[in-house]
Structures are given as C-alpha cells and as structure tokens.
Image (cartoon, rainbow, N blue to C red):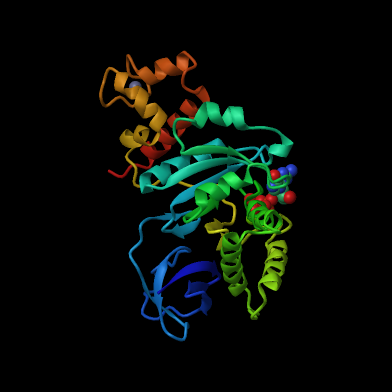
Length: 317
Ligand SMILES: Nc1nc2c(ncn2[C@@H]2O[C@H](COP(=O)(O)OP(=O)(O)O)[C@@H](O)[C@H]2O)c(=O)[nH]1
Ligand SMILES: [Mg+2]
Ligand SMILES: [Zn+2]
C-alpha cells in the first residue's frame, strides 16, 4: 500500500516504505475511476500499476485531492483577492469536514489581516499573515500542518509554490546546527524529498541536507506556473502544492441549507423570526439586522446572496 504523492498527465508517483514508485498503469481500475493526490492505493509489486483505491476520508475536486486534514487557502494583495472563491472553499471544507485556514500571503506588500479578520474570524479555524519572501509567519503554517495532510489552494499567483519553497529553505537555514532529534526528522524528510528525485543516491546526512537545499531551489519559484498537484513533506508536515484555480462550484448543497455552511451567519440565525429563514427578505431576520448594524460584514452577506441565487438556479427538481 502507498500514497499517491504526485499526479501529472496520467503518471502517478506512489510513496511507500520510503521509496517512490512511478506508476502509469491502471491495473484493475476502471477508466473512469479517478485517482487523486492523497489517495491510499494498492499497487503491484513492480510498482507498475495501481490496483485499488482505498476508501477515502474525503475528497475535493478542484484541485483533485483526497484524504486531507486541512485546507490552507491563500490570498494576497496581488492578484486582487476573489473572496467569493474563498467563501466557496469554506463551504466545500465544511461540507467535507475539513479544517480551513486563511493565509494572507505577501504581507511584505501590505497587510490584509484586518480585512480578513473582520470577515472570517468566526468561520475559519485560523487566520495567518505570512510572507513567502521575508519568511514572516511561515512557521504558523508548519505548526498546523505537522503530522497532517494539508492542501494549499487559491488563485494562481498568490504564492502557493513560493510558500512551499520558503518552508523548505526555512527548515534548512533554521537548523544549520540541529539537535539530534531534529536532525533525525530532517534526514527522514530529506530522504523522502530525495526519493522524489529520479537519481536517489545513498548520501551522507550532510550531503543529504545540501541536496535537499538544492531541491528546494528547484521547486518552482513563481517563475513557472504549477501544472500538477504534488505532496511535499517538510519537517513532518505534508503539504500539497496545487495549480491555481479560479473557479469552484459547490455541488449537492440545498440553497435552503446554505447558511449552515456560513457558521458566523448560522449563529445569528437563532434570532430570526422563522426557523427556516433564508436571510434574503424575510421579516425580522437577525442576519439582515446584523448587516444593517454593521455587526455582520455586508460584503460577505452580499456574497452569500450571490451563492444562494447560484445554487437556487441550479437546483434539480
Ligand atoms: N512580494 C511578495 N511576492 C511573493 C510572495 N510570495 C510569492 N510572491 C510572488 O508572487 C508570484 C507568484 O508566486 P507563486 O508561488 O508562483 O504563486 P502560485 O501560483 O500560487 O504558486 C511570484 O512572482 C512570486 O515571487 C510574497 O510573500 N511577497
Ligand atoms: Mg504554483
Ligand atoms: Zn434570517
């Protein structure tokens, strides 16, 4: 058994027992069985084909990832944030029982923290301010991802690949003189990172770390657009880099249930006159009142209405 750590044009890298197997074949799988990064699979001994996908804890489809513990949604001052994308990500995360953190990247270009906190404090698991350029806040990302499978997501250009890169470098620089325990973790991580490279030689621990530092330089640095989805293991945190995406559409959600996925709104709705209030134009709606009083973000409310109307028009009768 192993885990799919990379998917690129029908070729899958499977990590198993400290080795990486490159699989093209689909063995007994049906053609329409989609294989996700993060999937646990059974594959044949020679590592040539994937035979079975084990049951998934969860999956999301943009990007295709499975069995994740948390989403790290990245926004930045540039490109201009598309918050409706983030609202939809929260819906997706809550629907699938995945934790979600908001990472405001490029803090060196300006802080988005106040704006983010005003709108999202009560409906996400945490908000970080980070900079892949200065390294600010980068350890917060590591902290929540350690021992877990985390997935970076958000628009193209917000700095997802740069965050991975900075994390990898940060670990190496911070640990130029590591304690024996940290050293062991580092070497284990290094071995996994190295195993992801085709020429995996047996190297001394020192050379291993140098090699890792070289690899981290090769992870695309914003010069290239990420076209594939891949898990990187850095200091015990498993983090997936994904291509950017500008569109995510919640599916299988009844518009009448939508406010359940807006936790901050849902809390307010206890005080609506009607228990099935949709917070659109019902009388004595606590949400509309809170928007009027500036207690609930008017921008986020507008986006709720937009998503509601979208779901409503797509409803299946
Ligand atoms: N100023 C600044 N630029 C950044 C930061 N993080 C990434 N960038 C730049 O933003 C661009 C896109 O970064 P990239 O990592 O490719 O974004 P991705 O598409 O989300 O993977 C590149 O030019 C990066 O150098 C940051 O924290 N500060
Ligand atoms: Mg990228
Ligand atoms: Zn209401």
